[in-house]
Length: 475
Image (cartoon, rainbow, N blue to C red; front, side, top):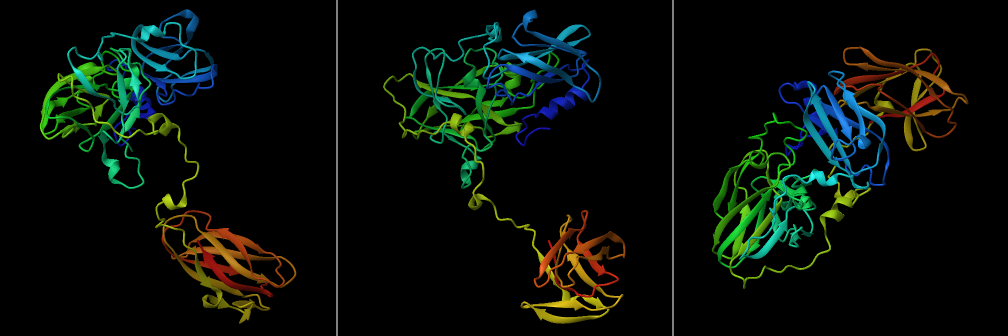
């Protein structure tokens, strides 16, 4: 129900909607927070779904309860069901679900969608705005990094630089052919409470003890501003929702822990802007921000700013690059090159069982035809051929008979697939078409998954005169 890095998936909210009582913790979740581009081609009709344990849910196509953007009320029909608004005209870029329990609005969830006209009351989404990103007076800012994002100019005209391998490092950079940012960057499209600069907080990096940022600086004392938000825990929750303790981590600068047991949810709740200011003295020319201890969940960071009272200092310069997070998000590999695929150590190997080594009964001769030695059956009603075979992994196996039919007509033959205890697992009639001069193949399968073990493949017929077999291939 959650990813390996503990990000809740849609099924997590579906489970909560069914099994967490609304009296204890009411919730509503719009499906899905990772599908904000579903309307990128513009206005259209669509079905909207929500998971909730509330008595009813009201859906709006705006940030406020205006009747003109009201899409309807749906009632809770019990465990195993969810809320659906079918064929609704989605015009604006805000979807807002409000959950009601015992007649009161108790939970809310909001989606901001791409590709649609801005909602009439979009401004209502900017809540409790403060100048959280505004630089401190009297300081020279050497670095501002938009963690997990591209260059961004905030509402104060301050440039936040793209996060890249010049500054950040994570576990994946130790592995050849992997992106150095693998499984350490995410985004959210949720509104961020406490700021108008949502974008800076909507991009973030996460990780444990191997996530770090390194900044070349002159020796001295620095003001370090750290920006966080809690993007996952508490989505669609209520006043009763308590996510304290789900994400706890330390922040260190070089060898000193500057924030001990930081719990972002406890500081600013879900999707709230959180700012921490610390001071660090650097010797050795490098300022490193890292997360030496993570007690719960993953460490998370949205922005880092480093400043000095020394106006003469300048940041380190790195070569320009045309790489960007936006491009990386849109790159699609339609077919993975073979050389990038791992070696298949579980290949479906084909094993051939020669006919002349099988158990033979009746009238037959062994002779060579077209450089292949086969078993040729003559007249007789007791002709049969039986292969003892073995299989490996439990799966359906293909059975391919290499044969020659010189009778001038199709020949029906009974095929039985028998396990080591004598139980017939498959009993079928195979037809071997006429093949005047060449060896050909007839294929069938075991019909069902079979376990690793020993089996028999038995072919019998009242008349096999003119029929020959070269081998049985099993794959």
